[in-house]
Image: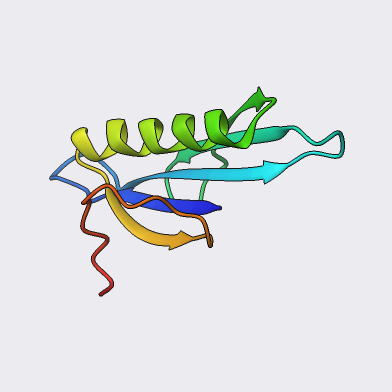
Length: 92
């Protein structure tokens, strides 16, 4: 699963992005990757490990919702098991 979000620039502040990627590791666990930065620059990456898919998905959705509250908009979302939470994605 992958969610790519952007916060549009407002005056002096540059545009920012926030990306969430959820992928299964080789041992059957799950890794949530959080990447943030400015387009065209090297971003900051953080990784979190989860044993169960449900807890990893919950952390991903919580992180997405926190960023939406901060003004980020979902630009791209990919994943068959994506839970719906009423957030408008802007591509329908």
